[in-house]
Length: 190
Image (cartoon, rainbow, N blue to C red; front, side, top):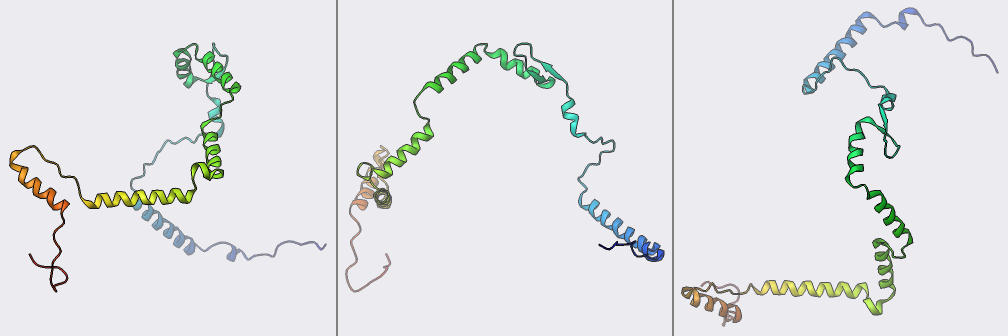
């Protein structure tokens, strides 16, 4: 392997930018900053900003809980004690509940749902097929649509003045208007 040797010499004038180029670049940067400042006028500049060190969160004060012996951040001790003092038997009750859950042979809700779906898919003779269910839903939807198209029920408000009007309205729903006779087809004028 041949030695690479020193890099080629660059003339000093070509390596350094010219003062006119530097001033032009600086002016362009200043102009871009002014444009950004105009757009970001809602920004607040903090003059005495102190950056946070990555390990600063670990340097928080910690306290040992006298009841449980756990080490806790000092700012969360009051909340921890409040929860601890709510119900002193809570921990015992929770432990008993978890022990019962370990010993039980009852499945949880999600596994029951999966099991029933699988069983229904295998036993079409009991539950019916998905196609039959879809057809039944379509028939029910069509029946609801027909009932809605027939009109709404006639309700009498109990006033003697409106009896005749309600009777005519009910009769018009029960007996449709007679079809026009004759050679005229299409809409007719009243």
